[in-house]
Length: 328
Image (tube, one colour):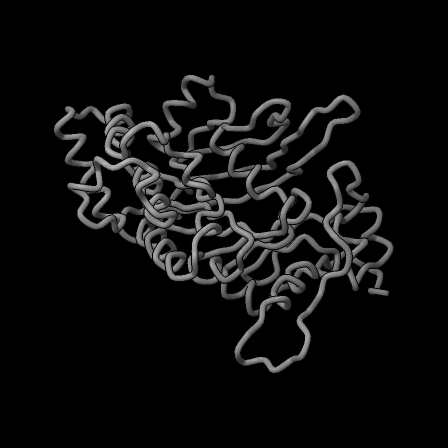
């Protein structure tokens, strides 16, 4: 097998406060291969976005990477000096944020922002950079790019602005793109177009994509594999079809059971009782144990490590062959 584009090993991210040190990410590990889309899903506060920000080196103080390693095509990047990481960011790693208005400067024309980014990372003249900017706008589906390139961000709709942000993210042909909730603020028809665009990146450019979202519909439509996160840890990871159709972790089962389907005529959807714990109150053992219907004594005291189960890996004592207790 070829070397993964992104390899994260035992990543830990902490936020230091006056009272305590809060661990937002606690031992996350995963790989993303060339041309693969890995969906990262979970409730708000699960650690999805923080994981993406840690990979790209944008954890602001008082946050810090407290442990683990991050490799980009075999090169470790989490311990690089800020200036060297800044050169990698944008050229080798692209970022698509949830709100395109926070990514685009409202005072500059779209073309100026694209040309500046292209010239920063590629050795091109002003004319060549502008031509590439027009080609990129056409590739992401902006109509009449020769005219729209001189427009300001406020002259674009939300969906068109998101397309411009995607053009900015891919302008230097990065190896990896981190997309943080790229379809949340868009209507359903525009969502479908953005999803199609992200899928095409992997197919046509061989770009690895880390897609962060809380929308299982987007994950099922876009991703090759999915990682289900809970309280800063990966509860389950595997091929998207297997995780959606046969989830193993009780939390993943609850998530999938909460998705309405046309084939089902049930009156009520599955409900997961309670809510995700605050970072200052994560319980010992498995963090999901207060909400789990299958909890037993071991779950309350011992943290489950991921174990292989078919094509999936699941962090749950129910699938640990060394478990001797039965669910209560």
